[in-house]
Every structure is written in structure tokens, then in C-alpha cells.
Length: 220
Image 1 (cartoon, rainbow, N blue to C red):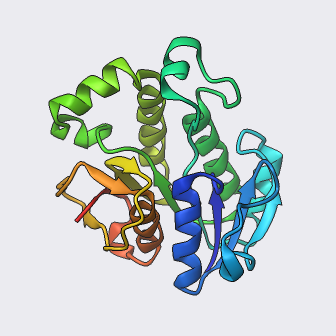
Image 2 (image 1 turned 30 degrees about the vertical axis):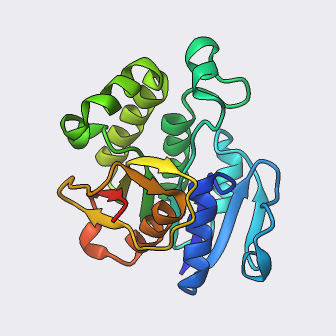
């Protein structure tokens, strides 16, 4: 399968790329810098395009010829700075507006399959959050979570074959244990590595029963 990864230089995006390559997919990455961090011989096979998710023209070129798209866009700046002063390098609406641009490009190109990383605690999983996570969302991550709510709602209204993947709190651990995946909003731990989240994103492509479903991803 030809798969485009948008948000390719973030931790989840890179992990998704590595999982896709391991599964035998042909991967294209869209990155503002036009390059990926070194990841060994396997990652050297990725076709990298310079482009911005906020530029519809860049997406039109990137989506052409793809079978599926994975979106992992977000704000990688210090969350406290973002909360107090706003992001310096990335638009606050990058998740909602960027994903809307992706979906528009997909519909124009006739590409049906979309997997989007959102966040556990938005949409139907909102009421399942522990109190500590609710406080963090309200006090520290409120702007990003508000944009993610808009993003996921728009994806769920879309006529394309979408899956929303909702990881719990992400960390940079290097554990290789498979993630726990649930379409019922169940989680086992409130921590998951970016590697596990990337595996969940890649796995979603091969699960037709997950089309138009929300999948929670947590550490097993």
C-alpha cells in the first residue's frame, strides 16, 4: 500500500513510518524541512516531500497516487509556553485546519482511507479521563485539546473511510511490547510510548472493521 504520513517528523509520525516500513508499505513523508531524522537503512527508503499541512497545494501534490493517509500533526513546543503566550512556530489550529486540508485533498484525489491521531479524552472518551488528566487538559493543554475536539468532530463527519486513533499520555520510552487497542474506550495504563502509538496507527490501516471507529491506544 502507498501511504502518506503527514506530521512525519514528530515522535508518533516517525514511529508510524517505521511500523509501516516493517509491514512492507511504501511510505511518503510530508515534512516542512523536506527531510527526516536519520533512522537507518529502512527509513532511507522513504520518499520525503517538502511541504506544509497548512498549504493545500502542497497536500494536493503529496496525496496524489496514495492509497491511504496517516495524520499525526500537532504542536511540539513547550506546552506551558503555548498556554501562556501561544505557539511561536505552528498555528494553534494546525490539527483541525491541517486535517481539513488533508481531507479536502483526499476527496479531490479519490483517496478513501484516513487514519488520524487525536487524543484520548476527546469526544466519546472524554468522560473516561482520570481526574489528574482532566486537570492537565483544563489547566495546561486547553487550547490544544479544544483544537483536537474540532479536528476529531470534523473527521467523524467526513464521508471518507476514517479511523481516529486516540493514544493516552505519550512518552519517549523504548519498550517494544505491542500496545493495547480498544474500540470501546478501554485502557490498561495511562501511559503509552510513541513507538506503541505509531504501531497502532499503522495497524489501523489493515483493520477494515475499524473504519469509522475510534481506537484507544494504551500501554499493555
